[in-house]
Picture (cartoon, rainbow, N blue to C red):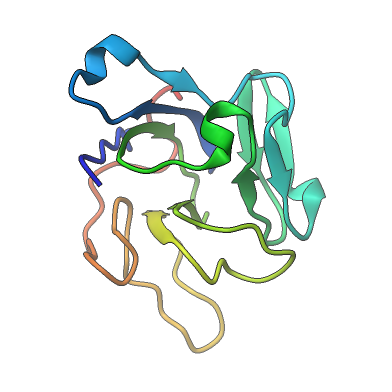
Length: 154
């Protein structure tokens, strides 16, 4: 992977844009994968009612669900890309953005890498969640928050 850019300044991703890697990436431009109206190009797993589009933004509220990109751009598959995402979290919210994942009906994705989107979620049951916003979950973890819940404009 050439480079991964995260604008994690702002509960769900509101803008996801990809730029394919090449010798001249600026010439190719960015591709927006979310149209701000509906879920065209996206497929939700379990609990599909968790996801809504509100004021042009993707919003997740409720039980666990994942959105998988299956759109037309590059046949839904990406390699060697840059990704820019803006998110906003709320108190006790827990979210994440997976890349190199494969669709599955239920559960946490078995494949892929998660970028943690969480400032104040503390875990469930006996599990205490210490990994915070921007962590490459289980690979490179961040334990301090650098953005406050509810701040910023997505």
